[in-house]
Length: 606
Image 1 (cartoon, helix red, strand yellow):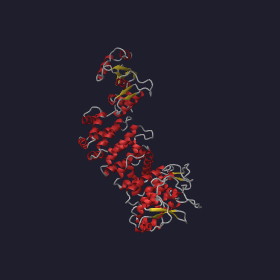
Image 2 (image 1 turned 60 degrees about the horizontal axis):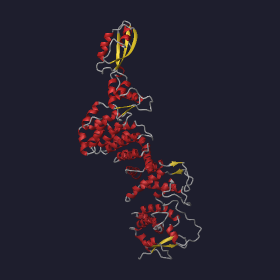
Image 3 (image 1 turned 45 degrees about the vertical axis):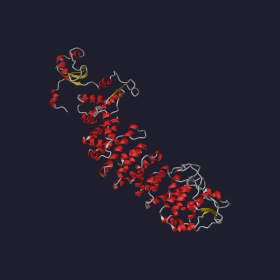
Image 4 (image 1 turned 90 degrees about the vertical axis):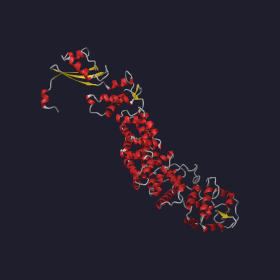
């Protein structure tokens, strides 16, 4: 607020005159002479003062002048540089902007143009307290309204203290090419070491900071690529990245991205390379893992997982796995509800688009097999109250999804590679509980028409469960055996396979359970189920590879178990049918006259 003295001594104003005068070209002639003359102002004093103030500008540059004329025939004036529109036209070499905004692009600009205009405008009275970044954003907005675009989609304002070291290190005076040159250098261990010695990483981080709020993402993408390569196994750069708060820079950049299903390819690439950079940083140790985790979990990870894009989902699995590796605390946090929701989103994407890397496999093995969090993750992937039109499903409020089946198939593959390792009691009970629920939705008295798996999520998951022997007892004999025995009428209705491969899946699970496990071998004998498994060693058109899985089951049943070997050797031969597949194994088929069920007997010499 003005003081009383200033108010009392303020001179009365006669007029405010606004003119456009060429830099260094003020003369008593029009338009200056008539405008000032009518108020009896000193023309020569104005011209001399104006020309002195504007001598740094190129001749004929149009300067905006505001003259305040007082009633005592004195004056004051302020000079502003030309309008942003004028500078943009001069830089682009055009006479006017587009007449159809949003439709026609009339010119292109470079980052240097925007930067130079911003530096000039910062000298204007109303811009002297604004940052170059703010002025540049305003200039970009004006350029867009005139339908001008950037020739090289670089971030538009880069401070000199960043450009200089980059240009020197890359031996190049163009920013995008300089970053490409440095990226090539960073592809080799010697190159990364060389760049660490000249401390190029802090410069690139400063460059990244300056581009976070830019609407043009190309320079940010190049920066992430270079940082990723710099941190690929080079501990000096990895440590420098943490010391310079690089994780925060990446987190801020990712957090400001507008995540949606229609994200551009450029945005997806920025996310992917940003995650690859963080994954490389995590490889340096626990301190680096903790820094990445604390900045991005759970919000940024959740947003990226929610995109459900294969390119970003695969790399996100890698970063999460790297953060959790060797850290019980980070693993604990991941296995809480927010973390499991992130993993569930990744599983949904992978079940739809497939996998390229094994990071998700390792992550799921940690969560479900090493930790006891299979059940909550599994049921996060389920849909409640869903209804599917399928002849093989009964009415139920609990419908399993394709994502459930995908999760089980992943875990099945992991366990199949590690047969000597035991699963936890919690995991086994969870599988058994799912099995009991699945049994209620499968119709065993009608055969599905689809091929394996079935297309019905509630049925698909059966191939991976620890099925009970009673399932096989309730099925009719395999087709090969059924064809080789005499059919007689019976009142007993035997169940059929509800989908192609059902019997084979049961036998495969039993075979795996028998491998090297004597107490399981003994239980099969105690359940009087040895003959039942022997029956599965045949080809079956409805159960591809049944013979191979049956042979595996029988071998696992007999290996190292004398009691089971004795039972097989003592089988009696009675009125058997000739089945070539069985004869190759030293067995043949016979029909039990009481139960009307087929059984296998040993015909190999003792």
